[in-house]
Length: 286
Image (tube, rainbow, N blue to C red):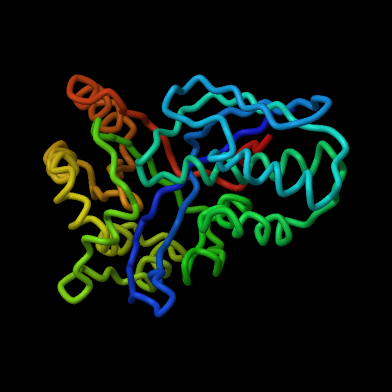
């Protein structure tokens, strides 16, 4: 069967504090976007096989798709194995949750293929064991996300806009970004203002609420992030922000002509440039 694994952007990301267990408490607004990986899953007699068009992706037990498939096979006594063939379009180390999206897609596909009849809530619980962003990717709905990524409050809104994604060649290690974070002097965006802006379609409030606590340490590692942001604003985009821990930057606009202009401009300078938009509920998921 075929399934799409949709990427996400963080419209606002606040690292609230460091917890006693070593994890960081987060509060953020996450939105699924139309950019996606394409995954084909087939039954095989036994085992887990992963085939990929990306040489950067491990295809053994280190892969998130492998991990979630193994959990389902063992926990629900599935008598056969799976072959997973993936066509990657979401870049790695970009802050777009490409790995988590793939894991979520495999969970949903295997649930359907093997007639497990598991609820989305159960799939999200299983996904949480492997990756903090997988629960969000299971639901593919705009949400305010808290904790380490497991607490979801969905935002009911059909607000949408165009996004231009530009990723520098160099990626950012999420672990390293958190290690370099200076919480005392960090930027803390207004997450509640962003949520209200989305709910009321207040575009100006959304633009004003763009912010990412992890942007500063990530820029220290990859200066191109800051350069891309500035160039997007100079071109006329209403706002620009790094997603997640980076290094991908998105520019926001309601002007499709500006979106195309930005695409052509950045395509001359960077290998990874994509036009996308917020994923709406009516988008085809499978």
